[in-house]
Picture (cartoon, rainbow, N blue to C red):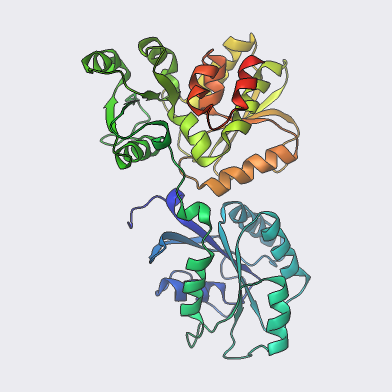
Amino acid sequence: MRKTPESLRLHIGIFGRRNVGKSSLINCIARHSVSIVSPEAGTTTDPVKKAMELQPLGPVLLIDTAGLDDEGELGELRIKRTKKIIEATELAILVTETGQWGDFEDGLVKEFNEKKIPTILIINKVDENPPSADEVAKLKEVCKSVLSVSTVTGEGVEELRQEIIEKAPQSFLESPPIIRDLIEPGETAILVIPIDFEAPRGRILLPQSQSIRDVIDNNSICIVVKETELDQSIANLKELPKIVVTDSQAFDRVKRSTPDNVLLTSFSTLFARYKGDLLTFAKGAKAISQLKPGDKVLVAEACTHHPIGDDIGTLQIPRKFAAFLGFEPEFEWAHGTNFPEDLTKFKLIVHCGACVWNRKQVLSRIQNAMSQGVPITNYGISLAYVNGIFERALTPFVDQYPELKELFEK
């Protein structure tokens, strides 16, 4: 469990002013020193992450952030990085002190509420200055979950651990399906995994390994092959597989080998639903046809890997778009958390599968794009669209999203 990827951990963000004891609090929760603690305000300059187990909840990721009241030019940069953490936060812990509550904290609670982030309010340093009953009552009008804590004496720390367990969002506790709802126990899924320059030697990529596990957990049969062995694999079966899933880069070749009565989709399309909003991404792909020469398209990568070989984001998508449209739009790229705040200059955003992120972070980006009126799609769905297999790749999801039929007809 210690090797559980960050994307599968509950992201717990710890926020507040400088020097309220955020770092001390995260050390208490983790039961050992994770963040540097100092009486000097502003010691934490960048988010500090600690992966740990919080039983019976399971794997969590504690994120210590810089004080959101930081000052100066460097302080503004720290605040921006902390704001990025809010986008990934699934459970927020807001730390304050007795008599300190003000507009700053009200603003944070408002932002957490708008983003529907469960929040726990901590009144820290109660060994030095305990709050009055009236102050606690007033704070409970702002946030239902209020705890008095001392990181020095340990008061309230165990209660905080229990509150984290109780406040964990249902979306984390009930892991959404990747593929298991598309197949019945005993049915066969063939996963086509190209072995190229970007596949780590001796390993397979995270979306592929997670899909394999989802098939196995469903008591279904999983066959893993390269695209060159797909024909033989299907021929060896007594019954046709229920579904074939391929890497987006092999869509064309795999389609030719997959019988029409077998469901076909891609890992990226599976993850469009698992990590984001499949219907929004499908609608966004339709915007490709509306692009005009000179229009700007943003290609967003969640990770910061160095592109090698025939990279999908930097090479394949521009090339495929150009072949489909008859011209190449003006592409720009964003990697990791370096996502533009102002998206209005773009006519379309094409996002990767975000396998290294949690769903909350992807949904935050989708909401950001939608609020600015910019269509957004992802790698797999956009490639299916320009390759002429949009309907084929999305047909497995029609029962869940009947609106897809309307998109097929347009």
